[in-house]
Image (cartoon, rainbow, N blue to C red; front, side, top):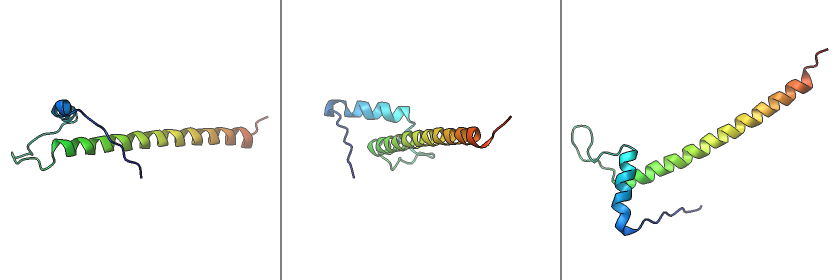
Length: 83
């Protein structure tokens, strides 16, 4: 298994987390005012993993569609002869 590491300078860590969490909708409190049990760092990591999975899924779906379209096109051209 590979490990991906992102290094953020200590002086900008909070700025990065604040910006990322704000962009993706993190809230320090839950509905009703209870503290969010998920930290900003946990939230950011979860969102990054979701983003990577979505990118892979979307690309593999696009690739499969292209292969299927090519196969269907070849099949039609080969199997259906009109005169």
